[in-house]
Length: 569
Image (tube, rainbow, N blue to C red; front, top):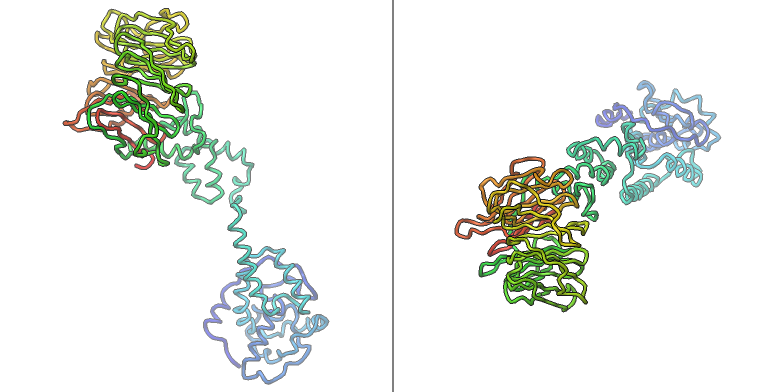
């Protein structure tokens, strides 16, 4: 008698994994029992082993028990000599199976050692097939071959392997669904899961996304990140909850928002010019408009948003002196020049009109709803129509009794605010009626002399921001009091603040007069969040203009146009 190899014996002694019971096919094969009672596959493995041994010439007796419990992979070792009775007769028809059922206990047990080894790969492949596929496939093959069970069909393992590979490819191609097993929490309706996960913070959502692919997709839902984004810096949401960047996933914006909070960015230079300028700029879609001397140049952004095409695609001219200020409105560029003129340019055509507006240089201009307002060094503010047939017709002339440095129209189109040099005995911030030109109110009462307002902007119909020579950024709410600002932030180095920009929520950016310092502020705090000096001592320059998106900040200085890239720090 040939004893099995040691490695086979060790493999046999390991506990078998019990698969789900198969549907009974025929005879006693369907009886439930121990893993050893699996059918003729293991008996045939024993026959092959006997045939390869020295007793291969001896013919087995036909009708010897080779029924559904033939192999007895977990039988007693003392029955091992009975293996000699196995022979070719083991492949008897189904009718013999019931007759030999009584001889199950005396079947050769040790044949299962090698049979199980041969059946092992088949079991691993069976795990990749569904129960129905295994039963239906095995039944069909058994009928074709006339065998008692699917395990004895020649070539079955190859077919099963091919079928398993096809199923694995199909599963990989299909989108991942919910985990089939796991905590009962994941089997709740998605609406309830969204409600539960809405109480998680950003870190917890990030860890939850690492559990599986389905949870990663589920936690990327914009609804879960909207609450976090509204509390973040520069995430594209206004204070009222309006989404300004709906095309970008909220989760991605929250990731970039952390770079704004931590001050992580990469500095670069987009444009350079040889002589000193006082540039102003505006952004629209994928284009940048910037003034240089008496021209306005239009550049196209590259897809990354961090670089420009080298050559401008449009050049707008018409002023005899430098362009001091300009805005984009209604597919027009409205520019204010040092020659006292206002220029109106159509963005997508060569139409250009300029007309004399003030006696001295026009420092500021704004346009909303077909109305243009301008402020000048000649101590006047004027209201103009944008209609093509009425260009150059002044609607109102307002005597401000001081030089006008900044101007802005209310979103309600009912009033506008002027920021003056504060050289008189009145507030530099005053609000005027747009239809009649009459003074409505003035803001603040404790401005020191010379505290001129260099930049002012409406954030909502009832709130606005201002900055200037007094080194403060002030936040005004017309619903509370016009005499005192709601909140203020002081420039740490007592530098004049030339410009400001906001994301409409909590982020505030300011440009200082020395060394090109750009500061970021969180409006929920008093102290400055981060400072970025963009020039060194020999090239000290004010920051004349700031613009920002959810990913980049652009700063225009005397000699360069700088960029701070927060998306790829």
